[in-house]
Length: 546
Image (tube, rainbow, N blue to C red):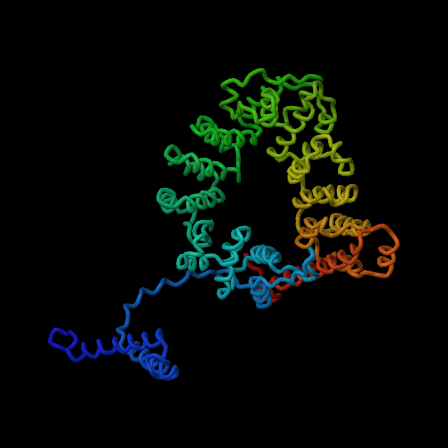
């Protein structure tokens, strides 16, 4: 070294000589050893030697700052068997597809992953540390997994997501992710994040503040409301659906004058869900003036007051203006106003009355929307009518989508009983949407009705993929206890073989059904095993995750 700490001339010559040696080796590799002399083995040996020399002469790079440790997650890890099961599900091993539309008889493990995550969340577990990267990869590929996967990954998942751009969705989508949001009771921290945070953080913050103190959430909104973008105001306003109460009325009433039409419409919808609100009273007076015993007279115009209260003036294509306005008034009026108008009749009696002038469909559809909005089970039952009646003859609506919404307002037991009766009366072809709103697992009368309807479809000679939607739901939702009852349907007995040979049924249908039932039974048993594996060991004392 010279006095200045630089490289001596001899050292510099040696370095340049080494670089020329390496360039010669590269040229020999490109041109071929035959043209430059030597053998391939000698070339590889020389390259290995030069590589070691070059690496030995490298100066170490400056070390990067070590990341801060991941936040501690106080939740318990799942039991060992459950961790092994999660690793299996995340690996995505599925049964081989045999072609020809056949899925095979083995369960689809990827479709069991959402159920594992949901059950683990109910027990209050955290994700096993070694599986958090695979869990984030799964959530990246499937958006339906993200809420439960990110909740399970918690703060460690966010910690990892900050280091990998592929997982950046977790930073946008996690509602705090178990560690990014302040305590909702910490006023200064809440205000600081509300004023300085990213939009996703502010939405999540508003949610936790709303859950802690509903009034504090509306007060927080008022601090920045005039300066928010219209699309952000709409999102914030929509978050008030959770915990909606009369205390929100002043804020919502003020939002009726918002410069955004969508914000005004959402505010009006929320106010109409509060039967005691001033807006509900105004809508009741308008609706009662239009509808009464033996008479229906839609409004002649959409005045300024109706517009301010959220009535949309221009109808969609194919709808008349007056019918459109009538439907909006009735939908927003509190259902409690109608019994007195109709002489003390209950909802079933009102719905059964004849409606003059061809307005029955419009009026009943509006009452259906009102029952859903106001979560009124008595009106919902009246509009649903008996499940055994043909859907087209339903008193309120023949639409299965509307019926599914009405069912969601009923207590869980009544909902399951109604759908079970529907399945027994009409089979499975129209039951898919209705089954989707029933509590999981389908047990009791509903589970029996589904199994019996599947067996009836098999007896009729249909192919199982005609009911693929219901079969998929059954794999996810049927009570695992039904596996023993389904066992008898997995075999293709001689009676079925003789029947197929002698009667005019679809060739091979029974074999396909046997395979489908085998898969269903295997899936139910695997679900039962998953739930048992996730159960806390008996020696673990009850905790917040129990």
